[in-house]
Amino acid sequence: MKLIPHGHRAPASSPRGRRRRPHPVSITGAVAGAALAALVAAGCSSSSSTPASGGSSSASSSGKVTLTFWTWVPNMDKIVAIWNKAHPGIQVQVQSQSGGDAELTKLLTAAKAGNPPDLAQVEYQVLPTLVSNNYLADISKYDAGLKGDFPAGNWNQVTLGTSALYGVPQDAAPMALFYRADEFKRYGLTVPATWAQFAADAAKLHSEAPGVYLGTFSSADPGEFAGLTQQAGAQWWSASGSNWTVGIDDAASQKVASYWQSLVAGGGVDNQPQWTAAWDKGMNDGKYIAWVSDIWAPSDFPTTAPGGAGKWVMTQLPQWTSGSGVVGNWGGSSTAVMAASKNQQAAAQFAAWLNTAPAATAALVSQGGIYPADSAAESAITSPPAYFSNEPDFWTLGKQYAAEAAKVTWGPDVNVAYTEFTTAFGSAAASKGSFLSPLAQIQSTVLNDMKKSGFTVAAS
Image (cartoon, rainbow, N blue to C red):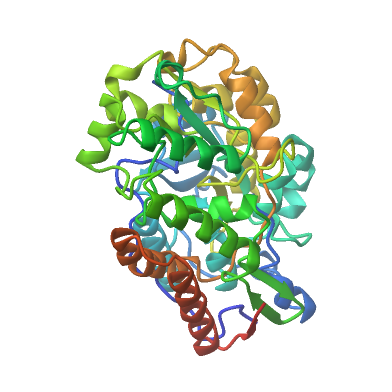
């Protein structure tokens, strides 16, 4: 049985993967799912119980195993070299890939043809798509004991609300607020603890300095908006038995959409898409003095705002209720074992090592630019990113935010929702019009897509 009854579906194009790197999370310079509820309720076997034929691993007459690993983490070959030196009987070959939809499309195509890699780096939000097509192995019998090594929000993203395990968490991606401390002092602003205060500060700033903004709303970054709705309690997808519910247009998401619509219309924030030349210039010259972003932001700052080193500060994302301590997720990925691998146990062993062994996680941090999901690895990071040398507790805060990440459900067609977001919100942001109509449009598109694919689905 498949969660996508009509089989393989390649992702639609999306704007993810420009210079921004929500994959991997960088430290240089959550999401619980019920996606397999239908599969579990129907008593279907996991993909690892009957591995598909094919796969690219090999074993020599001497018993040596060679595994292939698709990943976009920089310098992964150097990290894997540590493993290969210590494990002569299980050798791993790194095959570098583009991240985001490009890798997913290639991975789906390879899996359908019966020749995928043994392991692949898989973003949390697209993992249900691969599971629903029976392309990922359930490695719970090998790696379930790692549960205590990770924050619940990250672990739930790879278990999808079941006892199965479809990957080992690699990097965490909790959202945070970044602001220019010198510019806040200049304009008499305090760090906003709530979204109400953020809105008031944005209006005050725009009134006193019309050419300066407390940030921007980007219609080209659906992952950011999704994370913001998670913080407000939105559940875009949920499943009970074989029945799905789509709640993209629920009250929590409407609250977030109305909030940002008001800020854009009132001029408190700009409507400039992020990762553009205009946005870079604004970030560097003081036009934008705050940025709603993520723990991976330190990798972008040196290029986006080279003149701001030592001036920007990370703080907790403003809260809807003061002191509630909840943040959303924007990005993050896992190391998954493909169902077609002939050496799933060896692959699961490597996935566990890569994301929990101190030597491996230290190398992921120093050479791969990863902010690790492993709690012990997070605690081991002490020196702040060079760009944030003014904030010695940077990673202590990062670990706190990772533990605060909301638990939400990812559906099997996130790519459809994200693509529709850029279409629907693009014109609304440009015209400073209603954000509620685009939200309803996304909901309708996703519902229709799931119905066409054979799901039993309803709106919340």
